[in-house]
Length: 263
Image 1 (tube, rainbow, N blue to C red):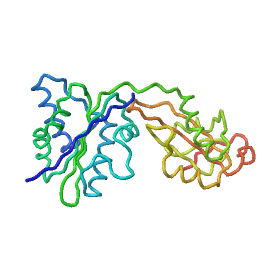
Image 2: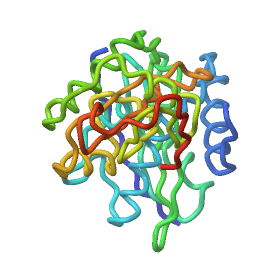
Image 3: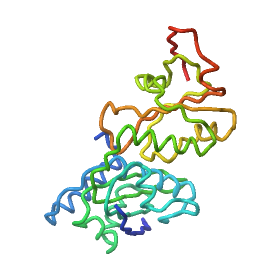
Image 4: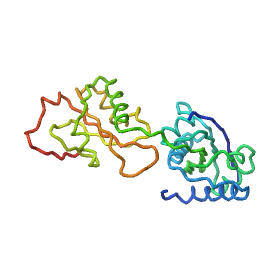
């Protein structure tokens, strides 16, 4: 049985059901930390999302590397996945069986140091099946509380991105705000041509489908609403964007109409 692994660390500025394979590695690393008298590492969903995305890329390319061509750095991809931290480090590897990862890492000084680092308190783990082997990623971090961003500031950040695409932003739009109560529809007095509800840890980045629509030059104006979170789920924001092909004033519904329209 062979296992190849690699480790890297970068300093940066700054529970839900865990799958069986990832839980096994979490239990193993926390056993090692407990033996050394270290606090147990807490599961972090943002780190886990970043780990899974990287593991999937490694499996797709059949290579073990910390950064693939065109891929963001460890710090950036963890931030984009919603993790908030002051320090981050990573173990990666490939093996035939899940049980081979942890012993391989513990027998490598760099990986062992990451697992037993007293300067981390959180971890996200992913195991992905490749064509021949399994690929695994452990992202360790020292978590920090995410910066509080007001509803108004959330909307301003999204509006700046939309304005940069050449659309007129409709300020104080109640239709977008009322639509926060829905999952993918809208409530309003004017018919939008396109409706987007999405959650994101990065307000400066649009979902791919929405960004494509914004760049299509079909729309004249847009309304934005940042929705109050129903529950705290990491550093994610719930945004509603309504796109109009004409100016709002030229496409009203009859007064008093209330429309519920699927996306």
